[in-house]
Length: 340
Image 1 (cartoon, rainbow, N blue to C red):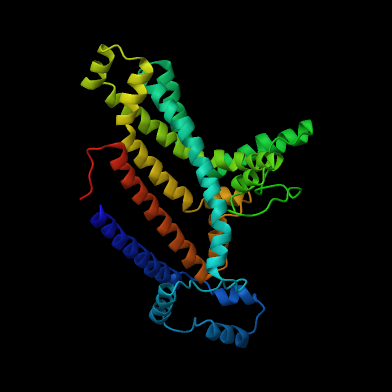
Image 2 (image 1 turned 60 degrees about the horizontal axis):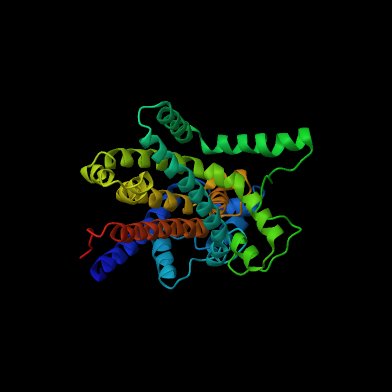
């Protein structure tokens, strides 16, 4: 296990290094001058030249690259060009919101997707199986931005306009009337620690629409993988033996069937969690969610090179870490798997 972890640590460093180099190269090739965006279109040429020199953007790309790599090795990701704030502090402020949204979306995806896949597999070639398969196909096919706007219109805008009731908020993480002490930067946890139950319910109301929107595609993929895994497992000899012993249907399905079908399910959950934690740009933009995805979108729009590099490094580190956790879970779920 020690050798396995050391190899994964080396890969972790290699992934971060590759992501940094490629990001700097792409930013150098992409048209657009961040200095011109910062100063505005009416800025004088002298001001543009002076600020470009002050920021070091007049240097060749390889000089900028090695200078940035030296900063990263010292734990310094630079400062944002937009507001001169530390990139590390901005990521630390925005990342908890993305974590909370991604985990809520994944909980919805697992809680709905796994039972749906099991029910479809147990009712193979019936109308239930067909209905679940159709819903899975629709869930995978529906674009996130369209689903988000439809949920806003059907649940937030339209009921408010017709019935004068506020079902669910249309944006943000918590209402302004609630003031809870910040400890973990996760609103659900902070409201629970403060024992402020109205604030906790308000956080859940703000979290509902973006979490459903973000969790629809992972939910459909998980349901499809669960169905496929359960169909394969339920036809094996040990399942027939378990039924012959007189075990209950729950024990056969959950303890013997689902447990042996968990490996591909855990793989999909891990990959989808990494993607969600990497930043749900569209969902966070639609629901005004102050997460890293929305921060990355603003950074790209402003050609904020240090902030773009910081978000890409955070995305890469998150994805590699989640995949490492998934690999370790393999050994926990299947005792036959050993990492030498």
